[in-house]
Length: 253
Ligand code: GLU
Image (cartoon, rainbow, N blue to C red; front, top):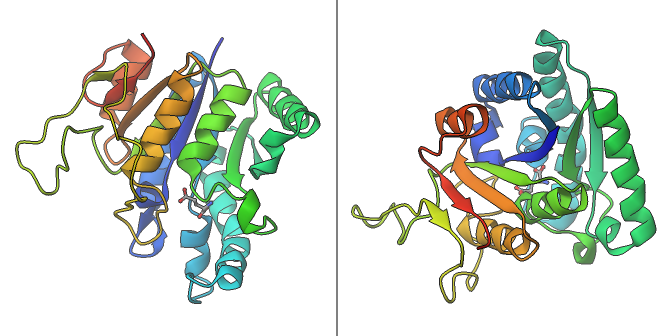
């Protein structure tokens, strides 16, 4: 069976500083229907966003952000559990840091754990371990984490569900005539230069971190689809019908 990684960000999972339950349910129901054709690993953000509803500290301070994330993980996971329960699907939580990918022993350990979950029909839900990781060990954004997860678990495709429809030739919020790229086989020059540009207060990524994730995967012969996470139609048609409607597919030539 084909293996894919689906990554959903805080911008999609959050509404007014709380988990957007309906959007989470739509995602879970998509995963439930995809399970007939794919092995699925979910990479999710949202711990800090969920934690903030319980602990309103200044998240620009490192320790406060960690405390918020620690409060948020169980809120996030119980929210997922309630929704996966509707479909009788069991889930498991995997928290990783950059170091897990640096050491072969540690990588093998989480690979074996994820394989065990998938062999037993459990959906592994991965997030960065925001709590114990030192700043040097943190990816800081789940776009790049999800690319590493996709590569190290041998997934053929990473689907990033985002607050945009895909990758545009210019900023669509500034330019009305911005056009979406359907397929990218080579990133435009300087595409990876720049700061992270999240649109949402709890998001850490933005287009640059998504392009870095795409670049990482393309260099390793893997694919990435960047598409809308508010409206899952483009993800559905791509994954269930093999029709590429909206969204940008990144793949090496
Ligand atoms: N790990 C962070 C969280 O769960 C999110 C990182 C990101 O936004 O990509 O809140």
